[in-house]
Length: 104
Image (cartoon, helix red, strand yellow):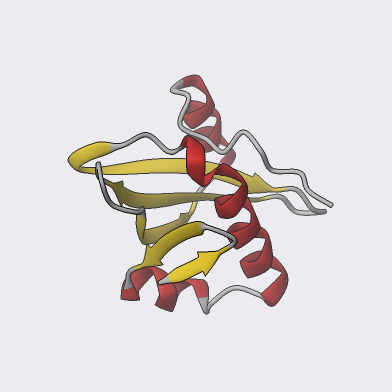
């Protein structure tokens, strides 16, 4: 359970375990992107949803997060998976991507 300046979300154990595989830089970028975009995640009861993003660096890191975001509750991130450019581009076509990826 994470609360950061009124941004509240939870991370499943699988999500947490997979996040530990990444460098501190990647983890920081993923969490920052979550916080920047969390208000735009659609509410959908009883369904697992997905959102994709990229961390722009020398070798771009493309990833997908599976989550549940039900009415009256805060989002729960349940899985994170490294993906390829093609899946990221498909997510853009389907409007299932983090729009805000740049920060200071």
